[in-house]
Length: 248
Length: 244
Image (cartoon, rainbow over all chains, first blue to last red; front, top):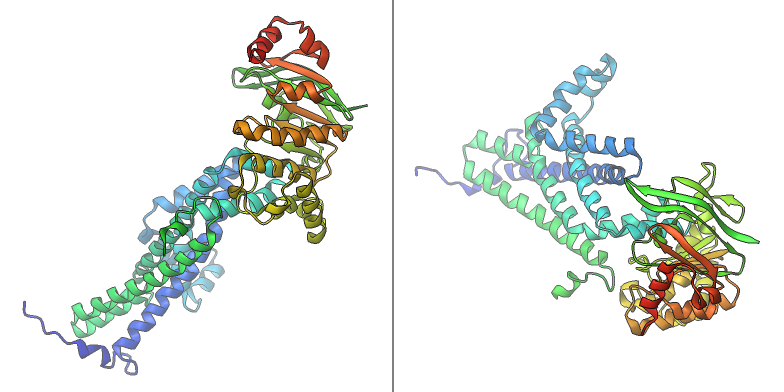
């Protein structure tokens, strides 16, 4: 293989003239992290609402939840990204469309919202699974004490359901973080985007993507360790202490 | 005065008739035991009283309120009727004190301190004050069921419903729960109890209802029921469970 290795490339100025390639990679990492955090926050909130809706004893609420899930998890993420970014501003009324197009950092917000909705559909299924794993008697017990149905969800069902599905939430958060790379398709300058720009400008493809690989791994390891402490905090004494018992 | 009145209650699950034309009542301060073979509809019947199981036809009146009327504030009604379940149904993520306080604070709007104080007094009454900081998963079945009774009592209910409160318990724990219930009955609590514990029925019941295939087959004073049950099905049932 006739490849000219040059690990010093990271310290050379990038095309913007002021920052080194290393700095641009870290900026990319920053955008990746920001997109992941904002996107997953949306997914967590929206997914919880939809997951609850899917278990609600009201027909039309259940149906709307189901439609949301099937729409947003069955269209490829890349296509959704294009729909949000290129198609949505065109189909909206003219003023709203213009407002969207001129929005500062439009790529970032679009990618975050798009990821938010996509992962909300998947989070909804996770939350629903958690709720369905509880016995029917828990809901009855809450209601028998005079709690309203929303109060029963808020104080009885969801706190236990979330604790049960923490591991699944962790893996959704990880895949949401990895999926931020799809943002490159609408011009979001996140980590994959900066690595690719570096490769195109320097032809140092191995160095560029080696850096991206390491940075993605590092970011997701941070998430894994952060979620591990959430898992520990979520253990219910006397109930399923598998995690605590692993002896870390 | 009748605290709970059931008039001609019927309910079907698809083609299956769970309850058919059930009528009975529970007077203030009365203890009524409901027994019958499994699948006879007794658990469903008791859950219709606080609206946990909807009914197809009939009327249920609790302290003057018609349960199935669309205008009825079900959460309010339920907060006034205590219920104890076969599988305890304590909230696993809350410790015992919090289990007792939750509905007092959220439903009755009591202050946290008042709710905790009331909870502790009731835990003391069921002999579990020392376990207040534990979680349900750290208690035995009998202890959990006593906590569940205390949790229901914390709402100052006008009546208590028990749905097979000892069926999920190991034999050596049944009595600690029954003792609490006997004491409750002797304090004048209005109670409806679905149970197979005929010893409990003999000791404190005023009336015994025998159900089979969704019907109330026999509804008699305790002494009449145990002395000379009228229906053949009740006789058979009694002979099966009283032989030992």
